[in-house]
Length: 386
Image (cartoon, rainbow, N blue to C red; front, side, top):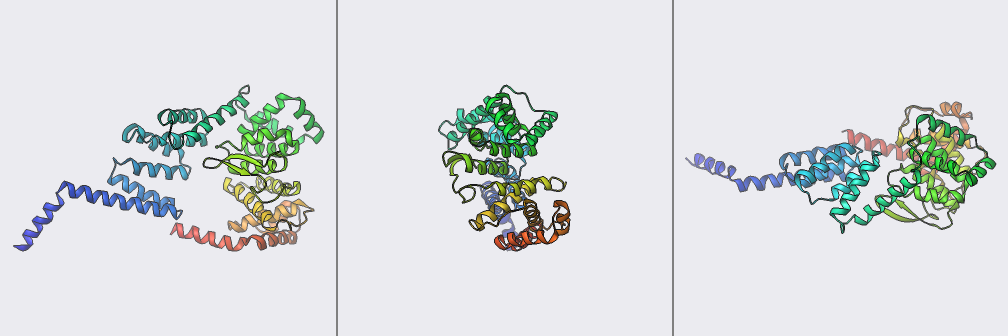
């Protein structure tokens, strides 16, 4: 009899609407907290699972959808993220106007700058005193500046890209100075290539601006404020500005507009030496010969070289032959990522001796502890897979 009575009490409790709501809220909050936990531990796939579970329990809670959309944005799934942001403001919570700002950023990263500007204007219109209103206005201004720079020129075709690349690669210093001083059409075309060209063309134009010097500074200062350029191009442009900008203060975009001091950014040296740049350029050119190098590898090799110069400065080794340091730098990258590339492979590729590759790697590894970092990196990867 007591058992039957207890069952009735349990049944009554389970059908109580208030009790169900509380339980669902507690469960949803649990999954939300677990999602945040894995997000902070840099495990986005697990974080996504828990955010989706929170949505499953509380489909009408816009915060759960918002968390998932932010996670998708961080993992470069911009279109999927924007569908969720749009559903939030259309169906769940129109007052979450920050979704428009985040959709704008994602559209910019998808090279849809027109839609990005529309979303920014929508955000400013709905939240003129919003937390990101000033930043949104700055971004609108940056977009308008870029449009004004490229207004007379149509979208660059692959043939135009290749033609400009060949011109940039073959110009000697005298021709370059003359064209940059007198040929306005050439300067506009360079700007077009800087924003619309292939990665190789963008790299070469930044190098060319470094050869031009101070006359190219305004173009580069505008470029580093653009929120939608790849970070390694921003870093390369900052290195050129470090040498030629008349003022050390420079405004850039990094999760918002910030002011940086070129004297200590991105590395604490008064100038960026030409032979350091030659090593980096040589490495990037040779890396293009390998089809398995994705964008993050280019960013990593830049970071390794910057870290090395920063760590050993001012006792930077004398660089006589850039190819040997470039080979050592690429080998450092391969060791960090456990790539199947040997010192002998790179010696052949760069036309240097195997011993010189080993010696340059030894110098970089001694300064940066590449082997130890690689081991920790691999442990992190294995932990994530587990």
